[in-house]
Amino acid sequence: MSELTIRAELPGDASGVRRVNEQAFGRRDEADLVERLHAGGKVIVALVAEQDRAIVGHILFSPVTIEGAAKPCTAVALAPMAVLPSHQRRGIGRRLVEEGIIACKELGYTRIIVLGHPQYYPWFGFGPAKRYGLHCEYNAPDEAFMALALEPDAFRDCAGLVKFAPEFADV
Ligand SMILES: CC(C)(COP(=O)(O)OP(=O)(O)OC[C@H]1O[C@@H](n2cnc3c(N)ncnc32)[C@H](O)[C@@H]1OP(=O)(O)O)[C@@H](O)C(=O)NCCC(=O)NCCS
Image 1 (spheres, rainbow, N blue to C red):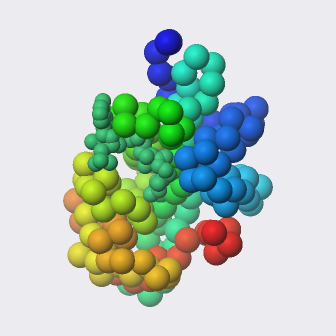
Image 2: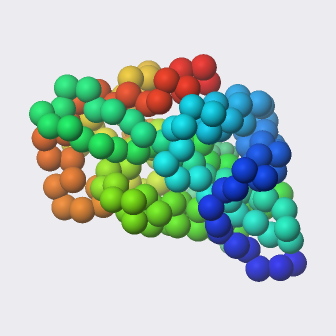
């Protein structure tokens, strides 16, 4: 088995990315979402994990707005993220998150939001978004709605309602 590579998603990766999302989530919704986000120009960072010339993992970051914040607060959402079931629990997801965060930081983003497994994302420094006065537009348990500040005080004056790209509404 060859080494795992994490790289930017390219247009030719679409079918591999669909397969990973469909198999990981066991349905088509997230794969459809990825395509809608690309079509709508909402992709800030998209990375794939590649092994033996096959795509085995995928992660995407898209813009969110924070309604009611005291100042303009640019932020991104991490979603969706998927690793082929046959390749899970080997640290591929971890590498995708770590390199995705670096890529967002390089683009100048300092605030990342995620709606996901409360046991998983704290590894990367995510904590309850509520601590920053952030609320989710979707009905989600508090512990699943998390935020990561990439610099001190990144969320100062950013309390408000987090709104995801409209493409998420269909999932
Ligand atoms: C969530 C998901 C992307 C994680 O991908 P992954 O590659 O399995 O993630 P990692 O290997 O980095 O870590 C996952 C688990 O494996 C464990 N792990 C990591 N490396 C490991 C290793 N070398 N050996 C054994 N276990 C390991 C971690 O402790 C973690 O355990 P936990 O979830 O029980 O706390 C993947 O499970 C997935 O696609 N799930 C379905 C879709 C989904 O839910 N997406 C996320 C929506 S928020």
